[in-house]
Length: 335
View: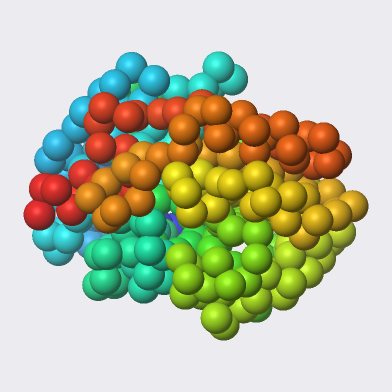
């Protein structure tokens, strides 16, 4: 079993199972995540315990096969133990480094504008493989991760159990200790899982990949909308906000001539109404799929319309334009 995929509680149960004090789980977490140990012998446990752990557990991190650094962002292509590939992107923000992690090899959601949607899902990642992306970045780049965004390759809520464990591991005080308010899980809108996510004992942030202000357009560019309509998605998001006290972010990628017209901004403002959501306007990183990025003046007009209608809106700074930063782009080009 990959030790990077074990929550502290799972490690406590492991030690109980081999007749040892579960307190040792905290020591293991401290050793792995605070001191950076890479072998169980470095923990200083009795030989019999170390030997037992070496039989049962292992350290498994992905191999960095390609990396690029554009200053404001760095992107790594990682090879997993079975030879599959995923990617992760480090975004250097003013308030700290934020890592965008992948949760699946490929994706079945089929969003028309997303490079990941062209890479059919091959399998889910384990919690250890998601944590491994964080550890690989820390070791290869030397970055101290201040926040985590779960919105790389794959749909996080299509791999719910592993994502839940990942959030618990990276936020653990004895682990990487990333603040829960600095962990955001993004979904294209799998409504039942939004309600399940709202019931987590520990709450993290939620982002909805919205990208359209009406069902007709959203169904055209995001097939998931045929299963879960905008009204269902936003009702679930509102429930999450009421249950957790956290304001939901609506992600809106600007696609030139598709969803960036003034009438789209007006529709989006009416859709949100008085509900307490953020809108995060995202510049598009073009690939070869036929979609174009919006002109700066169109983004400015869209932003102003939302502001004038009382919507809380931000414009995300553009990251990684020169390093194939579109989700799934580096993996697709490498393969």
